[in-house]
Amino acid sequence: MTTANVLGDDKQQLTMADLFKRDYGSAKIGVFGCGCWFYWDQFPGLKEKLEGHQRYFEDQLRAKGMDIVSGGLVDRPQLATQVGDMFRREGVDFLMCYMSTYALSSTVLPVVQRAGVPVVVISLQPNKAMDYANGTTFMQLEHDNATSLPEVCNALRRANIEPAGMVVGTLYDDERAWSRIYDWCKVARAYATVRKARIGVMGHVYEGMLDMNSDPTMFDAIFGLHAEHLELDDLAVRVEAVTDEQVERKLEEIHALFDFPEPGSDPIAGPAKPEDVRWAAKVACGLDQLVNDFELTGLAYYYRGLNGNANERLGSTFIVGSSLLTGRGTPIAGELDIKNCLAMLIVDRLEAGGSFAEIHPCDFENNIILVGHDGPHHIGVAEGRPVLRGLSVYHGKRGYGVSVEFQLKVGPVTIVGLTQTYDGRFKFVVAEGESLPGPIPPTGNTNTRCRFPPDVATFIENWSLEGPTHHFALGVGHIAHMIEGFARCWGIECVNVTDPLYRRPQYIRR
Image (cartoon, rainbow, N blue to C red):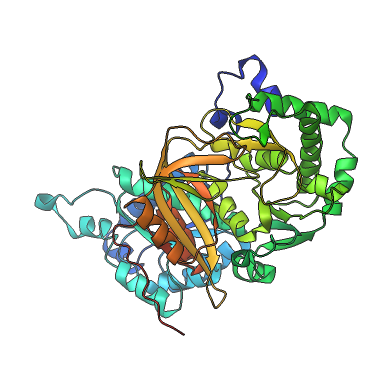
C-alpha cells in the first residue's frame, strides 16, 4: 500500500511518525534460567517457584512482541550442553541468561559457548527485599539472583567471551530494569539485522574523501553481512522498465508527503519543476525495484557523472526515492559511505531514525551547531512536513534536480559515527544532545539546530579528535547506551564524547 493510499483525506492530520510507523519485528532471543539441582530435594517447591518467575519474565517479553525461544531452567552441566546445542539448531540471534538463584558457572558457560551469540545476564529478584522477620533459607535461595554473577562473568571472560551486558533489579516492580531489558531487545534486533544484512555498494567513494575508504571484505568478516556490488546499469534497466501507472502512484505519494514552498534567499534553490519531480518519481520506482530484486538491507552509492550524460542524470536523482526508502527502514547513504550506511541501519533498528548527516556551520551566539547534509535522509523523523526544492546546482557534485529539506524532531538526539582506526579496526563515536526549534537556511538540504555539551566549540574539538568520518547517523532520543551495548556485542570500541567522564585521548606516536 502506498503512503498516498494511507493518507486518504486526512493527510494534513497525520504526522510523519504515523506515515512511517511500521512493525520492526524481533530478533530470535534465547532465554535460559539457571539453578542448582542439589537444592530441589532439600527445598521442595523451590524449583517450581523459580520456574514461575522465569515464565513471567519470558511472557513479558512475548507481550512486547519478542520472538522467544525458551531453554527452561538449566540446573546441570549436561543439560547446559543440550540447551546450548538446541539454541544453535534454532538459530537464535541473542541470549538472555536469567539468573534464577545461585547457579554453578558450569551451567552457564556451555550454553553460551554452543549458542555462539551475544549474551546479556539478567538478575531480577522477585521482591525488593526479603521479609527479614520471617526469613527462611528457602526465601534466601529464591532471592539469590545476584550471588553467582561474579562467578559467571569470570568463567565467561576466562573463556574469552565478553558478556554484552547485565541488568540487575527486581522482577515485578522495577521500571528502570525493564526499560533496560527492552532496550537490550532492540540491540538484539539491530545485531540480528546487521549480521544478516545485504548492503549494496554502487559506484566509488567521493574522490578525495580519505576517511570514507573502506575494505568491503572487512564488513563481511567482522559483521557477517554481505556487501553486494552493483552497477548503475542495474538501476538504469529498472528505471527504463517503470510504467506510467507506477510513476503516477509514486507522484501521489510524493505530493502527499512533501510541501513545495516558494523560493527562498538561495539563488540556486528554486521551485521544484514538474518534469524534475516526475523524473525523481520514476527513479524512485526503479530504486524500489532494485532493493527488492537484490534483497538489499541498505545501499551506499556515488556516481560522479560526465558532461550531462545519461548516468549523470540518473545518479543525481536518487534523493527523493532514497529518502522514502530510508524512512521505511532501508538506509541509502550517498558519497558511497558504507560505514555510515551501516550506522544508519543500526540507528533505525533501534527505532531512532538515523538520518545522513555531517557538521554544518556553527551558531556561536546561541551555542548551537547545524547538523545536516544534502542527498537522502530519514524523513520518518522529520519535524513537520519535509519540503522539496529544485536545485540548479548540487554543490560539490554534478547534476541538478529535486532535493529534500527538513529538520529533525525537536527534543533529544544522538549522533552515531562508525569509523576505523589506523589498524583497520571499527570504532563507534557517539554524542548525545538536543534538537532545538528555530529557522534553518532554505537551501534544499537538511539542517537541524543541535546543542551538545559542554559547548559547541569544545564538542566539535572532542568529536573530531576521536577520528570519526565526517558523516554520521543523526537519530532521535538518547541512545548512546544502546550503541555502547551493540558495540560490546562485536568487541568494538565505543566512545561517547558527551559522557560527563569523557577525557580526550592522549596520543602516543606509534
